[in-house]
Image 1 (cartoon, one colour):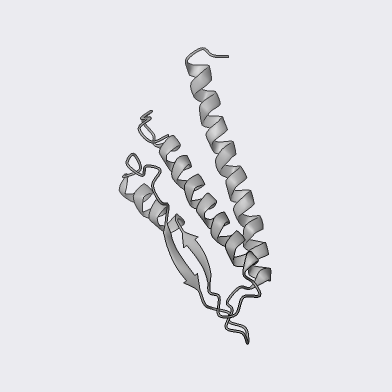
Image 2: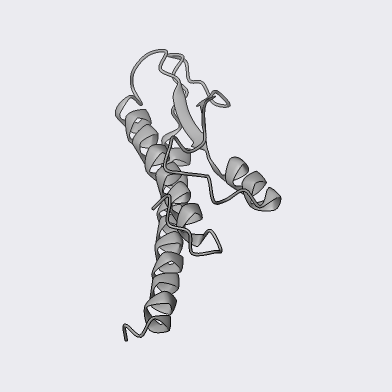
Length: 122
């Protein structure tokens, strides 16, 4: 979606958010798969802070579809085997991310419908 400039950056923001959510889902799946691996450190990705900063500065047009966010280790919980995967946290945040993904899709679809109507497509 990068390169499509329709004035308000909705498509760039949507693309960036979906890339960030997708990367977070990949990391979460890896975390859950390694929940019993000794000394495994869970990871997450924070794309919201970068997106928020770019939105405040008005620099949304060049977000692109590159890697969204910053990957960080999640070490706030470590079990006796040195593993930092907390399945309760992973599950809860997975539900939150799924809701956010649906909200992003709904926003994108709404914008696409408005544009379609404006050009006489419906």
